[in-house]
Picture (cartoon, rainbow, N blue to C red):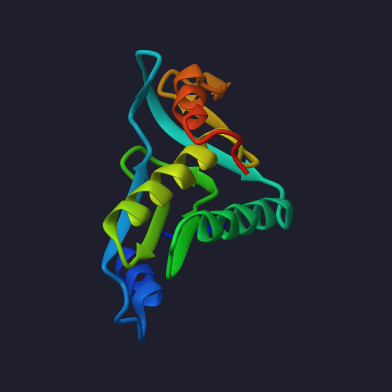
Length: 149
């Protein structure tokens, strides 16, 4: 978890440092949208429980490493107040083969969207606020993996 801007170049370098056995890297960069439910968003605040959230992310990263042939995996999630257009999450997976890298990346982002212990609140341009509810479409996407975790 971090409040700082995600440094994509540094994270990629950290993942691949000294590795020549990587054949493909799967990646996902999530960005804060400027609208939700047809309303303009002024900002989004992400909350988490320190320790609990980091442990949950480490466990799911370990699970992906066991489920697919990966040389490495990076999960970076921002917390705090974010503005539309800012990067909110980065998922990187490195594997000798692209399919494993891409599938593991999709699995991890589906897990983050449906099971990670984060709480999101949107603040709209009119000053009102609303907590973000789980979306059925995210649950349907995650269902393809069977039991997540």
